[in-house]
Length: 305
Image (cartoon, rainbow, N blue to C red; front, top):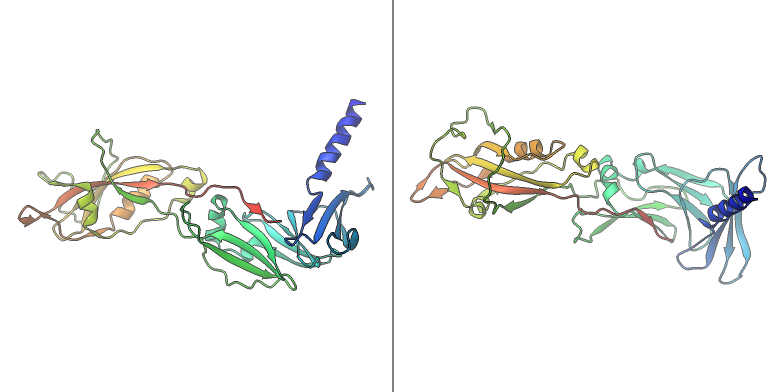
């Protein structure tokens, strides 16, 4: 008796998951039910007009193993099954009778760059007229709300938007350091033929903010992929030596896991400064600053009904 009750409960929970999905204008709704044929389990989808002819069925089809969340077009002619954005995801466009219009791999819509960064994005699917729209934030900074769209024609599955990188690379923020405590440094690295090294005596230390204001070219490597996937964030303290020409000769950093410290060091070795004056002369100097690595937006992908 208890087993039967549990089975009934599970069936009700499963059937309620997508019991009703309506178009954005609220006119057409999609209902899902399980086939009673135990020999070949199927999910039956029914589209009905809920506004002008309540209860009128305008489409019906069955799928053995549907993937993704269904979206219903405003005219009731299309049902699109969309998935969260990941490398092996795809989009299936169907007519109201279940006939397949197109199955589109996510790689046809987004670049490898965007697919890799999509885990920290709010990827929003919607149907607008005869178009499927995937909307994504272009910045990984949580306070920047700019979005870019990828569009697909529902009628034939044509991708209407040229594939390009939509999401800006995730790079660290540069900040002056105010730390006065003792710092534990990793082994420094110097450019070939460096004449100014950490063994050079008497190098004056420049205030962190003044040091950074003298930087004229500050290329930064993108957040290491393995560190993003491992959800690693934090601060790398950097000390750089700059010769009398403004070139960086040696760099050392504090430690941060999964190659972030190495990436920071290699980036700063390519920096260029204006010639820095100490007192009445231009001379080699040393300066410290922080590179702050933050993962930006982190939210679960969602779909618009």
